[in-house]
Length: 259
Image (cartoon, rainbow, N blue to C red; front, side):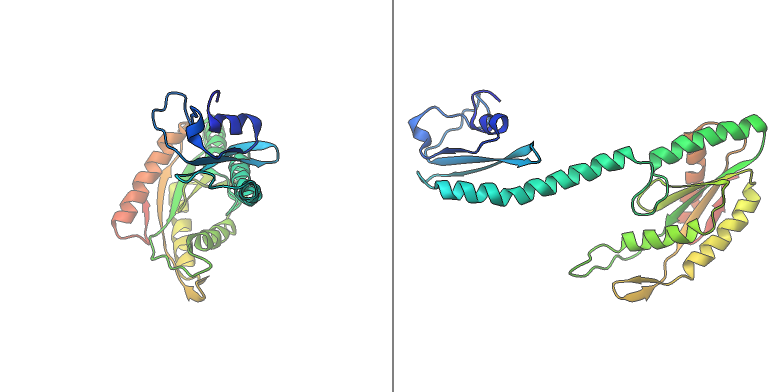
């Protein structure tokens, strides 16, 4: 930070403009740098809401290449970029502080595992059965338009709504990956969950979803594993993932019970 042009911009929050770098021993990024040139250099800090998110640097081999009005124009223009970075970082922060997946309203991966751990302990203490099911949206050709280049969010949202409609107070519902949902069935055997999963697979496959101005159907694969007398979340999810992998190996659009 000390002794460099960029460091000065970061510390002070003020643009730095050098019209002729040959008039002094200027260091742009590090005092130990051994690269030098004769020309012009400016650094504009990216500041929004009194927070510095970085510096944009421009240099030219031409001396006096940038005027004071250029610096002011860049400073105001880059406020837009600063706001974009601010918005993105704020969203990332909020996602880390919430327990719900924004797109589906299901529990996010961390919250689901935390809640699942507690339910596994309860079920083991009172000696009742439990089952975990992993539902993965099968691969499909993603089509885009000028205004919407990603159809996955629409598909994920619709599939999650279909699943949510079949949930009860005894279920935990989470999204643990972009295309994978996890459901824990408290006090339910794997046999009953298998019947439920088959109905769910057929229901989703028959539901048309509007993607890129046309109706399309999508399929899911489901892996089921017992969670009875188990209190290790990773072990339970691993077993369910094995069943899911075998269902995918069959070509997808299938339900498989690992037990």
